[in-house]
Image (tube, rainbow, N blue to C red; front, top):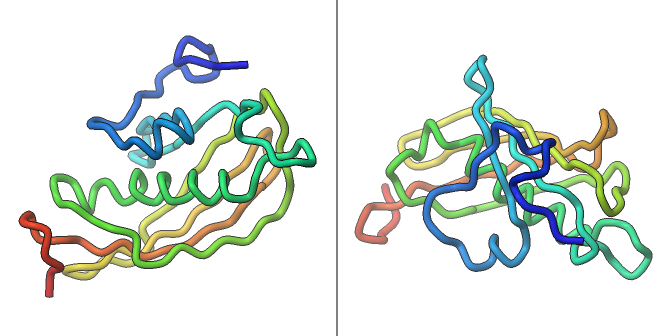
Length: 146
């Protein structure tokens, strides 16, 4: 089963600008900005996202959490390259094929070069993964900021 952005559950969502080969292979992932300014990320679970037991692979949830951290941190990293310094996760439930998976989160702290984020991935009101992490802003030429 392959989904596209024409799935009605993805109404109002868009893809991130640019191209990330790993995210394209893993996703597709989408995001939207809510009326309150917060960001929501989503994808629809496909067979390629499952593990050998038929539940969503933990690595898939962690990949989506990493994507979500960058979307949530968007106001702090707009037009600035950034990399993941750390990503912590706690698994709380499993998901199956066809489920609408959504991530939400918040910036909890920002310094000149770091952005601290936390969030949750859920489906149908059921929490799947709690995550937190740190993103490091880079200099435009690729060097780390001070």
